[in-house]
Length: 90
Image 1 (cartoon, rainbow, N blue to C red):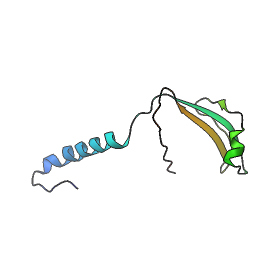
Image 2 (cartoon, rainbow, N blue to C red):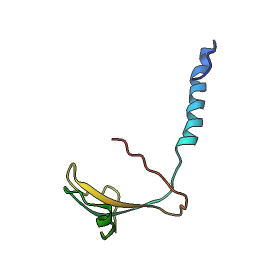
Image 3 (cartoon, rainbow, N blue to C red):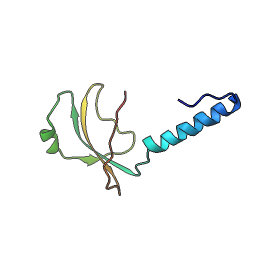
């Protein structure tokens, strides 16, 4: 929480400043992404099985299956050596 103060005209700029600071800490631009698709189906498979799939590069707006189908993808951030973590929200 921001400390209380009587000058209400500064509330919005203070809140925006706090959001900007959080944005820099939480989000970062990862750079160029290369996505490959290994296959999809309604049936689940193990990670070991998916490791043997032939992954092919896909284009933007790639459709890969029906609703609730499972798909295996490889995501590579070009030129990035540090680990990048994904957080899915649906």
